[in-house]
Length: 284
Image 1: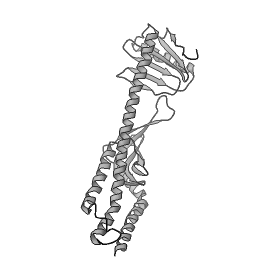
Image 2 (image 1 turned 60 degrees about the vertical axis):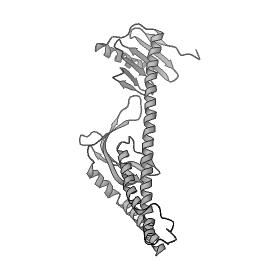
Image 3 (image 1 turned 90 degrees about the vertical axis):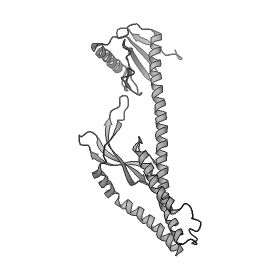
Image 4 (image 1 turned 30 degrees about the vertical axis):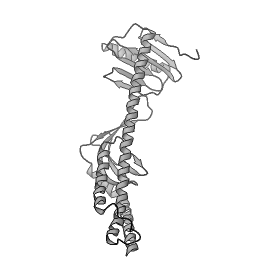
């Protein structure tokens, strides 16, 4: 009894009950291949029409979960579905294996998706960082072209001014293009992508926010505007969010973001200009 879990069944509702350490799950299958699962603890929900697999999970008492599962079975039966009346331990194993295989596929897709998203975000941050670094490196190269023997830049003969001028917009364009397909905003030491702004949606569903390329939280280039909607996720305490890209940028929000970031732009330009002035003064 300390090693194995008891499996129980309700023949009236053609349901298996599997209690274990976290709580209990109720399984009911139907002749059309549908399977419904109810759990009284937090676990990922399932709502897959193609696989005909459905799972509802919420932290509540065992009695409440069982009452809800019976109502679910009754509702489906009233819609014309027929329960698999023959109950056996082998069928129970088939049902839990079906759930486990489904969750394993979801986990593998999530891991691969997260890895791809992380790789994409890393490329975005690295490209942005390189573009900003080249902006500052452009000034020593310019000084070198005017004062080749200056101690400050006498070894700064690579890359050429032309290459730098071509690389900066190319790296920014690469970051912008990849950010269009990025699933979640991501920054590394303040460099990457981030949402700015929160405007009401036209249909009062959620709000509108714009994704930007950022450097040290300075919004550089707007990427895409999204309608962000808060959604309740069954079996989870915290609400989830869905992001739906808009066809066009929300320019009113972009102008507001630029206005609010004016001081940051001034500081960035002053830093860039100060570095250039210092470089010139060292060589004059």
